[in-house]
Image (tube, rainbow, N blue to C red):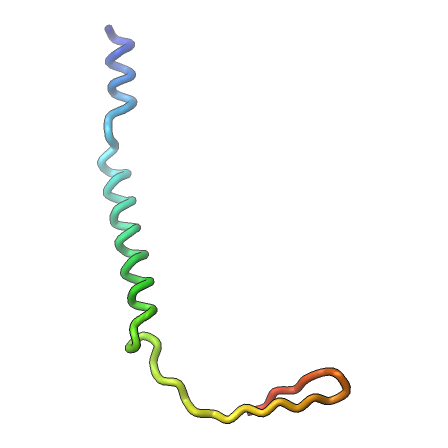
Amino acid sequence: MSHLQQIAARHRPDRWTDIIFIVGAVLLTALSIGSLTSKAAGTVSDRPWTLTVVEGSFEASP
């Protein structure tokens, strides 16, 4: 009977592992949603860019 008790003890849910996993998943979800919002993205400055091709290489200047 002790063998069955050892098997039951191994298959018990580990609550700390579950809590850490859930907290990590919520944190990653919050960070990914936060990075997509307009406030986190900020504003885009209007800078005209030009592209000049010189002998096969390129040079980009603001």
